[in-house]
Image (tube, rainbow, N blue to C red; front, side):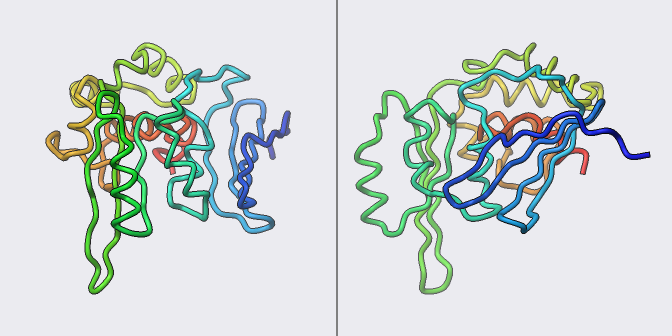
Length: 213
């Protein structure tokens, strides 16, 4: 028997026409990502009944920039500086554009690492920009655990030692590989999936949706 729909809400719509639509049922919820009539992705999780995870660094707009579809790349240029993200992976059109951007970085507030790489004759100009501190400076662990449990994730399956290690690590160490962690890797533990979502500012709902796929 199909569950009765309670509420439908547009949680984000990009300037490229990508729409995030949340549908709440009695016990479960889903966020479907579409571009016009074209279905892209969906995330399923427990209905939290309008209880939200409150953080300026977490949003569906951040998830829109996950490289899964077309998005406004200019958003990432300033999202960290405007307190919308903790970390951003930014692509530039040229070495000159990236050099100019680096010159404008306040190194008292932010760290960065050059991730540029060559593909045959073409060079991709990439940079990771991250705030100073650790994730524990920007989030409360208790709030994270409580909200994930509301979403349906049991923390008995999460390696808490690994989570605590990365949650309290210097953010620069999370992007430079010294913690044996790569946020872009497809091979991650549950703890590392959770850390990646917090680092990139993705809604906890979307991380649960990926874990339970």
